[in-house]
Amino acid sequence: MNARLADKIATGLFWTGALAVIVILCSIAVYILYHGVKSINWDFLVKPPQVIRAGGGIGPQIFNSFYLLVLSMAFTVPLGILGGVYLAEYAGVNRWTEFIRLSIETLNSLPSIVVGLFGLLVFVNMTGWGYTLMSGAMALTVINLPLMIRITEESIRGVPDSLREASLALGANRWQSIIKVVLPGAFPGIVSGVIITSGRVFGEAAALLFTAGMSSPSMYFSKWKLFHPSSPLNPFRPAETLAVHIWKVNTEGLIPDLRRVADGSAAVLILLVLGFNLAVRWLGRKIYRRMTAS
Amino acid sequence: MDSLKTFLFSLFHLGQRELTGRILTAGAAALAIISTVAIMSFISVKGLSTFVNNGVSVKEFLLSFDWAPDRLPEEGGPRVGVLAFILGSAAVSLPAVFLSAPLSVCCAVFIVEIAPFLGQRVLQPAIEILAGIPSVVYGYIGLSVLVPFIREHAGGLGFSVMAGFLVLSVMILPTIVSILTDSIKALPGEWKEAAYSLGSTRWQTIRLVLLPAARSGLITGTVLGLARAFGEALAVQMVIGNTRKIPISILDPVTTLTSAITMDMGNTPMGTLWNNALWSMGLLLLMMSCFFILVVRFVVRKGGAVR
Image (cartoon, rainbow over all chains, first blue to last red; front, side, top):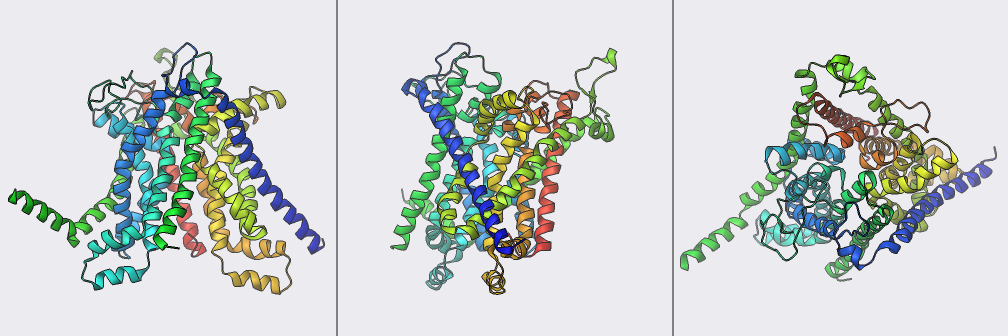
């Protein structure tokens, strides 16, 4: 075959493939948003779900998703940053470092349901807590830690050596230079790491089925005492997140307006995740501009 | 008040010490190792109890189609052969990779070579958004669009192997594309220029120079995509119908390892044979995941410096 003709055909194929992916994404987004927007209203966003009757909302589920986000980030962010600092600044080239990297790689590619099973064994049964937000937060930390460590490491490696050397030359020790010079320099990368892992918290469901549970106790939003059983802030209560709710409604839901609730929940979830996605880009650009003064 | 001040000062001083930094950071890094080792050992201990406590042979577990964990002793006692689930997992994840890998190659080449501006401004963000869509949402779309579509136009119940691998093929696309894009971008520009200066067309350059050189990236991406497809639970569970029968056509319903665990883990009491068999399936998933990682490491070491 004529080489030029082959080139034309191949180019056409590449364009088709790329267009196909764009079309798939657009149809998914349009489908979810078109159906979802019809069922989203204020009542839907704040009211508790119904078990058999129509007219339920997803208020507690949205609250649970955000609260779980805060709890799991409280573990993931400090641990991830410290781990990333170790790999970027302290780790030598030896077997120990190699072993840490192998662990992170393994942890990162574990199916989330396996982490959920581990959580069920350790954070639910061994601790004796039962299905709790705290168990869910720990399972999510296990899932997000490798990603957070990797992103931190990469952004710390991006900080120019001259900054480090200047700080050391002024008499600061390594740890002081890291805290005062290197980490602020790596801040934009770390922020985007935090937001990426946050998006994963919202979307995760398989690991939460067996750790945070599939039900929410009735909560009274007037009770804010931390460990009261019906306080929304109690970290030792079971909690169904939005993603888990979508799964549960679709597989074992008995309500007559199942489609409406499922459509609305999926749309809210997608909007949250998209919102985080856009926030990463916007914030990243903005912080970068401020830090580099360009 | 003074003693408090000295205390705070010494605390501050401690926080500035080099040793503190070393201990804190090394501790966090060690936590990654501890979690990995803990997951492996806990799941192994629990997963092996089917073989140790219940006396089921590994051969029977892996190579028998006989899944009847609730059969009464009068009828011959319970059976826990999970071959049907293993094949089910393979039946949804392998076709997903075969569909997704060529499309991913298209996208990666498009982003790097064909139309870098459009690729990086439109296609790459689109793929990142696809990566961010939660798996339950994919499952829900599969359930509300794909399943009825297959039922009406192809026949069967709609809940099928086909619905499973179609959903998975979209889900794993971003994984393969991002790894492949990185590895094509990392190739030295001179190779491409050399090919062009010898008179190659763009397609010849891509086919004969770029793709062979990015081979290890392609394999790594495909294997990681396969790993993701194999371990995905909820999206698959929602669209495949979950029957115990072995599928004959791609329109038949099927059960995978992950969906069996999802469905029954909450309903079976801890310590029973049924429950133990589910933990053994979890162990099997864990071993598959480790196997995939080893393959990737091997490929990367052989193929040179591609992340």
